Length: 189
View 1: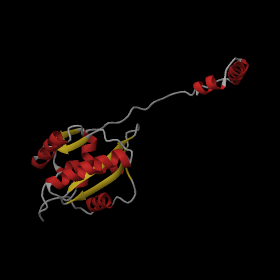
View 2 (view 1 turned 90 degrees about the horizontal axis):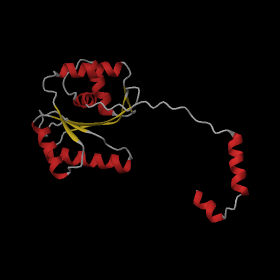
View 3 (view 1 turned 60 degrees about the vertical axis):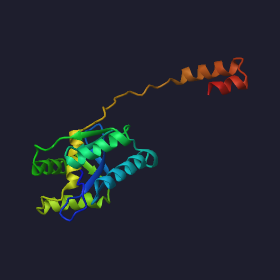
View 4 (view 1 turned 180 degrees about the vertical axis):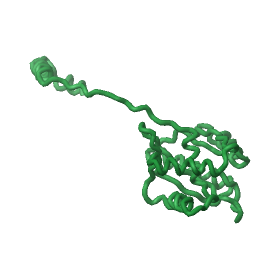
């Protein structure tokens, strides 16, 4: 969510990370908001992208950017300078903020959004929503974007295959009785 300016009347820029699990729940390990210029937001986004990839070992599959004037600028800047980043513009102009926030709260209340403890900015927005505050919900917007680019992994069902003990014993005997040097045994592993 791009605010674009650091002016007093400007809203915050916000970034959240979301991990989807096969049961359709969104896990939020990171959610912050800051008053940043467009360039500062660009640098913050790049820093978080590489931190996530190399420090946190959490690959970023998609980066959704709101399709509005500062977001379009940010998207174009990323495409020119860091074209490998998986960005896409998200158009939510026709969806009123109250509807977006209500939908996020609905998911939150049903347990479909789980968050890491200590995400102060996110917790403040949830509490302020319940107190009737409708503005300043920048993190809610970013969470709504997660539902727009939802990427739920498929649930993999597999049955463990048990190798019978008798087959294992037969194979071990063949290996021990065979003409295997220590070099050949080492090559097997």
